[in-house]
Amino acid sequence: MKFAALTLTACLASQTAHAVEVSIALDWTLNTNHVGLIVARENGYFADAGLEVDILPYSDTASTALLAAGAVDFAYMTALGFMSAKASGAEITALWVTMQREAGRLVYNTDNTAISRPADLEGKTYAGFGSAWEDALISTMIENDGGTADYDTVTLGTGAYEALANGAVDFTLEVATWEGVNSELLGREQSHFDYADYGVPEPQGGYIGAQTKMLLSDTDMVKAFMAATAKGYEWAAENPQAAADILIKVGDFPNQDLVRGSMQVINEGNYLTDGTTQVGRIDGQRMEDMAKFLFESGVLKGADGHALAWPGTVSGWFDQSWMAD
Image 1 (cartoon, rainbow, N blue to C red):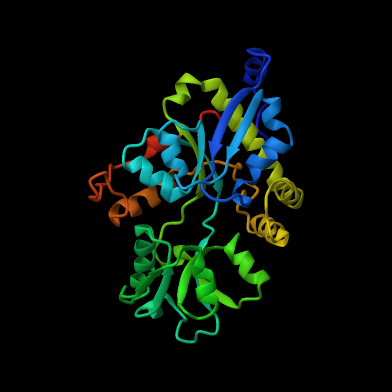
Image 2 (image 1 turned 180 degrees about the horizontal axis):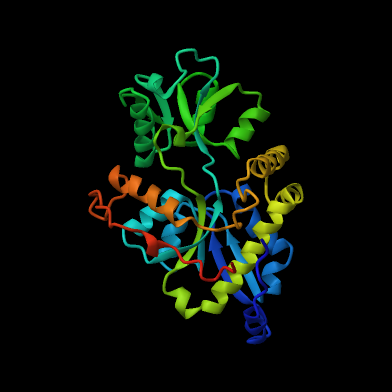
């Protein structure tokens, strides 16, 4: 489905002889989740909209925190990062979602014969990343498979994948479209469990959002930026390997096959669109299901560290009025 041309683009460009400067902070180091932003910049969609977009690299400060503080105009955010910020009162609004399917999964070595189902993870060692979300997810999977959520955790961050490969730990979590592709390129024989098969709601992932007040104060700029972003992701969905080449050209990727393989998996797995879902479309019910799971699991906490009560709805957490139907 194509996005309608916005006459506001011409209006925005005519307001000044210079492009309007816009910034967006990334949630992690540059990867294929961000491909539409890079395509929009490199193919001139932002420039055509009268915008000069600064795509800020990942830093020690979370993109949600930068956005909430007004340090950037937009942020690319993980689903957990966005929902955690919103639940704690951040005045930010989601305008876009990248992945229409859950790309995360729980992985273990195929030759580990002690594991054949999530219940078998009881008593095993998990290589983690330090968030409360991980325990809620893993515990739910184990318990829904009839086991007891009693397992050991070692926090290793990105070192988790090497630790799993050499057998130092029993399981970890990965993103199929990135770490999963890398494992295949390295020849690692690994199996996985999908979260949704064991009671975890399947969210969409990769939100782009802005400060809520900016939706009113800079409406034309928001619409222009989001329309150009959507065009970039739509082009990437239609031209996955050409989009990979564009990303490789501007990024620092030691293994270019990882980028190309990732875009192939994204394309074949219908992550950006299944051909019927509009690229970038947020499913309010799925957002609500995941948010409720996080609230009820005690993952979403206030500034005092106490778990927050489910507010009853999160329908006001997103706004896609900028998007053409």
